[in-house]
Length: 154
Image (cartoon, rainbow, N blue to C red; front, side, top):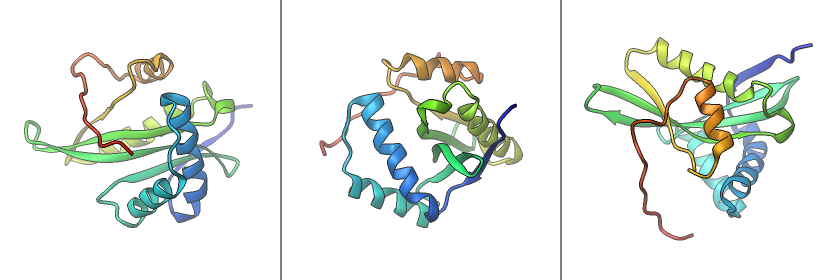
């Protein structure tokens, strides 16, 4: 029997689960041990101010099984917004069960429904080949850009 995946905007009741998801994701994908309090404050800040980010949670039988965060970028080339998918996490036992696909489809439908949003982007660690295959499976490409960064140490 197929499990029904329900996607909904996150709220403060999801905070603890989202913090846990992000702690796991950072450790798993980049070997980073994030500061729980800083992370909790960061997510709370965005939940209270949607201009910073928007979160979506995937649930099966009212149990959170995945999440993602959206941030925005203004594109003068397109005279519209580009939404960036970030902070993607799916619990290990639900990987390959369509959770990310459901989250992505939900976001894609939001983009299609809005005239001011032109597309979706994300970045992925070059070493994370599993995630790259997942993103390609939903129709995304990594052909056009490389991402460079500088970050303060934390």
